[in-house]
Image 1: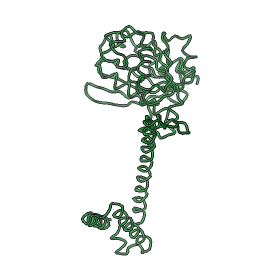
Image 2 (image 1 turned 30 degrees about the vertical axis):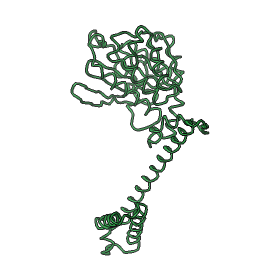
Image 3 (image 1 turned 120 degrees about the horizontal axis):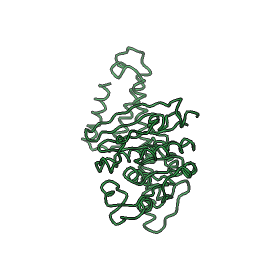
Image 4 (image 1 turned 60 degrees about the horizontal axis):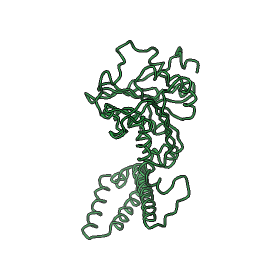
Length: 351
């Protein structure tokens, strides 16, 4: 194969010296590829010329297939960019017309970087547009999660919290601002999300989550994100999510360490009670107000929660169902531990 690559390089170099157009040089390299493939098919195994040009047509077919896929991807990306540019130009000169289909021209431009990703594409972005996600807590973890869910184009985002913005929040709760001190956090978060993406449906619930509303509220959403810092509230979220049959992406932080996982007994993964069947002893589960927390840590963990939510909605990659990712910010280390359902779990054991 080295001989063929050298020959192709020589053709390209001579063409460049002669100032031959790139298209013509590509044509010559393509003819060389066809000739080499013809040699591999026509000549018997062991023939010197066949051995000199690779010895097998399979390698060249794989190489050609990969090149074709790259060309298709580039063509699709170019077409999408051209469409977005045309929409923008039409909008600027006042002749814009909304295209038919699930996305408007503005949405095609806004989500172009998602749509061109092979693991998301138009289908994944449509799934995000149709998704309904509830975030419990608009604090340190909820702040980045809410912003990235809004930016990603999640169609309906609910947020429930009964707290108000205080000065001590602003060191880490980046969805809020100094000017919005004493405002309920859910309304402050709503302002920020609508400013970022006015096309989404934001549902603020300015109240404390309680057992009498949790299950019904969770039933209105596809996915729950738990960013609370109280074991009692997390246990309540877990019970209501199991009863409603909804998966929960849960995050937790303390000092320099954070963790993210996806609880989903309906999908074969454990619930929180499988992993933490009992409340920790007093003093072992202190809140951020008691232990302190480095300001950027909630941004890292909350962003991970949003990323896992996008993957879960789009069906992309490998999620954290049945696994817990632990991040040690002080030493810049991560590790993942596996978790399993417990048959005797008092919350999900009967499923």
